[in-house]
Image 1 (cartoon, rainbow, N blue to C red):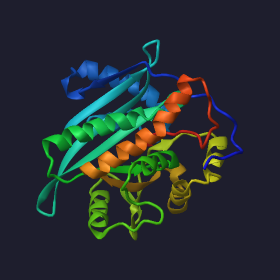
Image 2: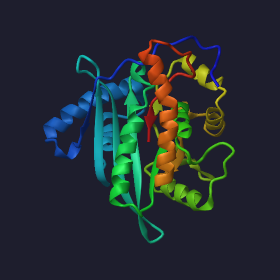
Image 3: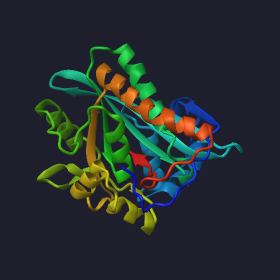
Image 4: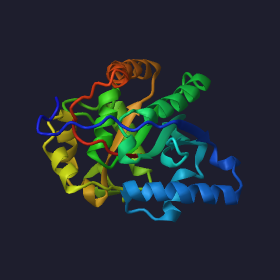
Length: 279
């Protein structure tokens, strides 16, 4: 449902170039220059993380593969990024793969779902090489916008309002939360973590999220009301072939009509403001 109190809003500005970069192939000066430019964009979107920790998040030492997609406007300026990492972990005497990500777009460029496409591409790539291996996306949702986006497009994901987490996935979700870099806010609730990435938002945007009628947004705010203090919700989506396939259909079902409306110049009324994601 859309919030009828919200004014009409212009469609997002167009990203004219998306370039994927392997940070390990860059020389130290090149990597330093790139991370400096990305940190400038990052600081317009997030608070709570310094340049050193930001660089560590973009190039994880424990990743089997890392790629950063850079988004540029018509003038060649970087307006956003999406870093995706593939980690391999031993769990129940087996190797599993865990996708982690950090993503941020300047407000005027949000809403196209391009970061989802990049993450899906990396997931399909790994799954094609390891078809019988358990692969999951594990994130710390630090803002209702990121929780809403993932809940909306993943056919099966946890936690989700009104959906009991199967025991198999709950055990794995708790394992990933406990072995992440983040500490639980309360030991009795292992899925609420102190993450420190805080999405910058205006007072108007904060009110819009609190007044949202989306079930998943209301659920996020109920279990994580202090997200603006750097607390996040551990979130997982199994990246099985059925889940990826159905999720892709859900994504296309939503975005194809939007693309058609944009091409024909028809504007839609706004829902809650678009946000950013850190996973």
